[in-house]
Image (cartoon, rainbow over all chains, first blue to last red; front, side, top):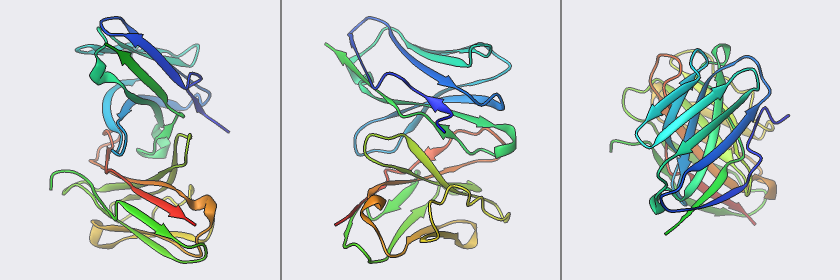
Length: 113
Length: 114
């Protein structure tokens, strides 16, 4: 039962353009959503989060959008840079699960110079 | 160090042997998690420790897996009688209370069972 899904295993964009990574979830109890970035041979690092009481959160080049009715969130990176090339994981948690996160399968982003 | 530390970084073991993986969380973080990532898969939750509360073991895949956290700090994940399907990267993470604090991950232990 995959409660968090990232349907695109990979995405390739040109430097300077926008990268849009998508994530869908099925559990309506999820109320907190995060994006993590992972480089090879390293652990995931926290990027940005959003609470279910918001529909947008922005931090520099990174913006996360949440559409609760569609159970969908997306991460926008603009402008994309070659150093953004990594695997991006979407994650979600529910209030009654402590801080336990449920992760998607990840999307490999490649930003071409 | 300032981050979550895991050891060993790589472990190759023969099928049927027991292995122990170690995690040193960030000082002061009361919550500690173990996840694993199999090839081409997302991160799979294994177990969660929070302070002195009973751990949430609901993600452990079989009774061959166990974990403990001594003194509210260092944690050890033990896999008994390893199988080839146990091959994965085992990731430890810690976080602060309150709820919804981001997890800080270590670099993981890559376990290969031959």
